Length: 91
Figure 1: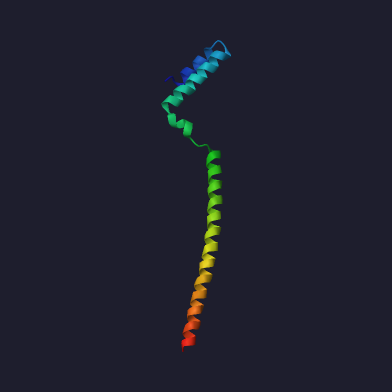
Figure 2: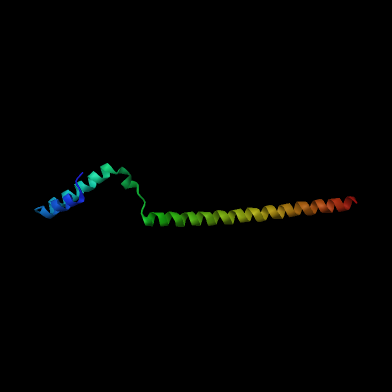
C-alpha cells in the first residue's frame, strides 16, 4: 500500500483531474481491501440516532412497567383488604 505522502506526490504530479480521481478511487479501494470493517463503522450521527431511539424505547417500557406495577399493587391491596374483612367476619 502506498503511503499518504506517495499518494500526495502522485496527485500533485498527475496530468489531469481524471487521473487524480482515479488515484483517489484506487486509494479508497486499497483502504477498503485492507480494512473491510471501515464500511461498517458508525458515525457520531448514527450513534446519536441509536441513543435517542433507545432512550425512547426505555421510556416507553418504563411507562408500561409502571402501569403494570400500579395495577398489581391495586390488585394486591384488594386481596389484602378482602382477607382482612374475611378474617374480621370470622371473629
